[in-house]
Length: 79
Image (cartoon, rainbow, N blue to C red; front, side, top):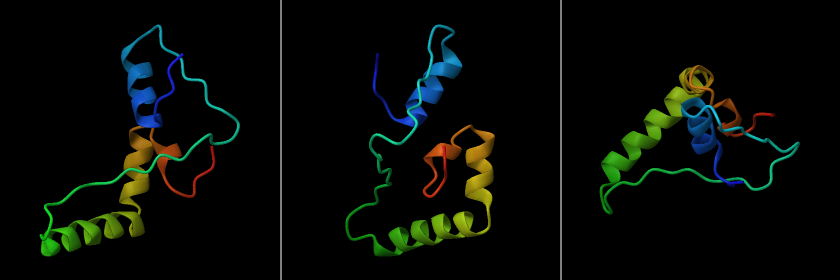
């Protein structure tokens, strides 16, 4: 039994016939995901923040998550 994040578990299940994912009825612990930018590169950080906000607001983030089986990772979604 391995306790890993949803993205890792999904990837292992897709690649290995022996793997199974056991999903609890309610979340055990929320894992926060992030990106890193070079310290002091405020323009690039702002651009990345705008991109994430744009794809979230226009639905591309949700569609991509659905396409790749990662919808449960989105904030505010039900299992």
